[in-house]
Length: 117
Image 1: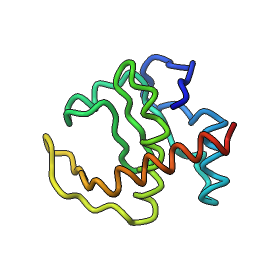
Image 2: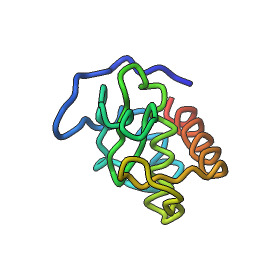
Image 3: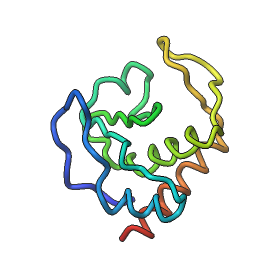
Image 4: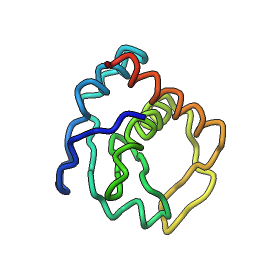
């Protein structure tokens, strides 16, 4: 998976997606992903025992976990298309741990990286 050089410090409003990744996913899905925000070096993934997670239009990446960004963007697409229903909760956060959705998110992320570069 592609490494992303930009790993800014935390921001209260998040950062936009890296442009190449955004363009790649937009080409694949036809969706406008400009509103998606990335929260780098976030403590939130640890609260759900994860390295990263996506919720709504936000992607939370724990420190050093930027390589999960394309996969998590895949989850944003799944959520936007109504494909994801919670299967459990972890510390009050709805979580879906369906292996098929995980595989689909990985495939979407990898395709977006290929198309965007």
